[in-house]
Image (cartoon, rainbow, N blue to C red; front, side):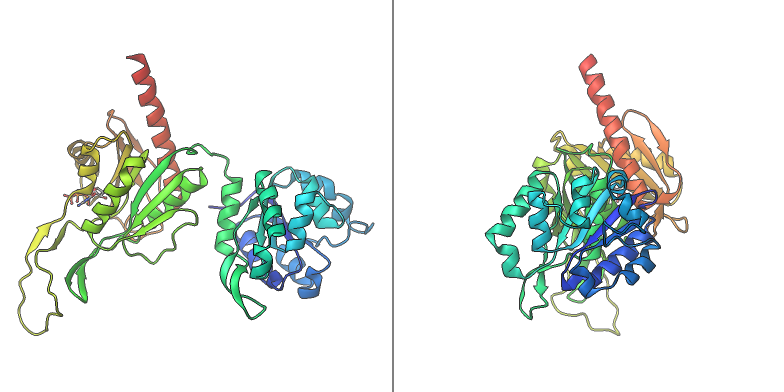
Length: 406
Ligand code: CTP
């Protein structure tokens, strides 16, 4: 995903975490955003304007009454045309001022003039964050549509530990994507996504698995969250961080995945089975480590087909499966769609380099149970995820319209 074409204001207030705003700024500009930084007077005690000027490539707003500064003169126009104002770190003081509409410095004035999304990433002492006055201000801001992130738990600058750390850059950027997301077309949906490989033990240290990285499934979970859905992500072992805000259920084996899926299925409106479930497991996993240098025969038994079982339960959820194929992709995929009894099958050719398994990009065929086939061009997995979700919405709307006609 990119922030190209996005005009942002990054407000930095006086917390020791102000230095982290420089990293955040690098990330935002790296994603293509045009960022004007506004430093509060106290933030300047921690980090100087030159750092932000250099990283943003733009003058930094510090004084609204500087006649030499075009930005200062135009601050209202700037606030009105920007897509989002992001305050990171946000102190208890700026939260209070924003909650009460006080505009006594450049940043709080911009906050009143802003027409786009407003996000606050707080950083303060744990006791301050928990104070009823701060919590009341946070509640006021949230009720007004401002995104106030929860601070993170951990070591604080005071030497104590608690909830008050500035959220990680990735979490702040993810919240920004969600706030800027044009489509909230999955609001009200409960999406169940499976992702990653499964691991089937042979003995306590060895297992059968596959090359699935989980990127496609995590991309789908992230896209669904951005579009307003509630998401449960059931994942085999991967190196990825679950997207903030999902219900995350880590599993190891296909049988554990099956149990978790069936448990969460009744409330799901959309099921997306992107996981690469191991087809086989050892019939008798050894309880102790198998010793080397002798021949071992491994007896394998098939794992339950979770997707077919989900479809057979006919809960009313829209069901999407994935197919990893190496040849005759369309024909095998169409047969798989029919045999599993699902609504949509996303087929990819895993024999090709650079797409599908363990890759950044994917190029897929979408086959639906109403006979339609659509080929998507090669794209990053995040874009594929969005295209799949848009296709699901279109198919669901078509199915509802057909039902209404009969
Ligand atoms: N799947 C599943 N449970 C299994 C195997 C697969 O739920 N035991 C799901 C996968 O999550 C995917 C779809 O079924 O959505 C197709 O997976 P794939 O590995 O392509 O197909 P298989 O059903 O295993 O068939 P085959 O290996 O014969 O191609």
